[in-house]
Length: 417
Image 1 (spheres, rainbow, N blue to C red):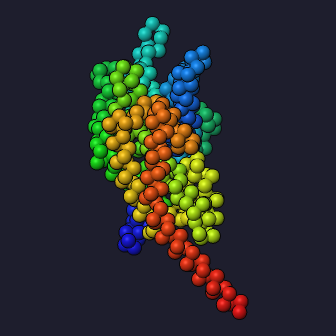
Image 2 (cartoon, rainbow, N blue to C red):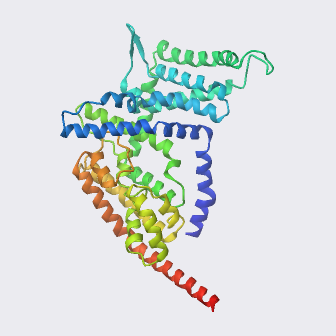
Image 3 (tube, rainbow, N blue to C red):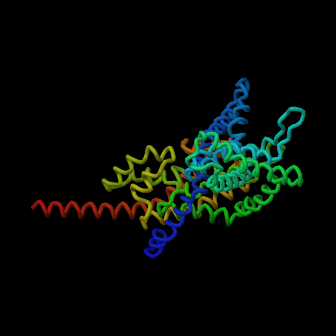
């Protein structure tokens, strides 16, 4: 165990953090975080749609969903190259890079202008076009950042800065769009379909039960060493959103959702936060004999109800704690396995609408995500299972902390005497 912890601390964690701090990955992560409010609005629209099922007289607000979550890729197409140039401290040309990103994305998705109408595939503008917008956005970011090193004007030029920026960005913008135009409209190569077809096998791989369990276990495993799930979010979010978009499209076409590897199924099993730690928070609060653990429990129980468990992970601590790491590893295998079984067999309906209000208490979230009371019941079952897994390890840890507290109290009394 000591060798494993040393390797995670000194080898894997620094490498993951270094990768997360890479300017392109960091820009992608920051861009996705910037559009989270639009994803949340899509969630609100989903909940509103559920309410309309009970109250048909409520107005249809689907247009709001189409202009927020439904245009997610358009906003990312701007944000990705814009953020790249901002991080590279090329502020002067960052806005031009962002606008170019949108223009190239429209070309990549093969938009048409017909009789004065702008014709585009709606799914390509939303979550379904995320891979295309990421690739085009990164391409624009690389080209614009490279070209920003060159200028037609000397540093002491009397020309206003905005005019210098105009001329310095004309050539890279034109070349980027010309390349896209030539490939898509002259060579008749549908880049959007090409990119999507290349990415589809990845979704197929993560839907494999072994890969599904292994990937989720890796997230829990890293979390026990203090490496947050947000490190891999730029990768997982792309798969999650494409998969939920595919589920929505399948249902709209009269079919059934099939993709299990979505944010909604990942969140539903994290009762109290990643690692399903609500049970542990309850034990600390109401069952701990240790004064320290009881105090920690009272502090973390509130956030844990709303699935914020960083105070527990780092305060108990669970991270780097050999006793409490093991049950989280067990949950990292058991819960994804249960998830795959119950959703694959149709015991609980597979989510097909975006619903990322992850801070809702999990039983409520389970109902909303599946649009079924079975989701509510499933969360309660998961809580019971997590309680059973954590309990024996909690008892060992509580006894250990009580022993330490008794020893410290005895030592203090000895010093006073």
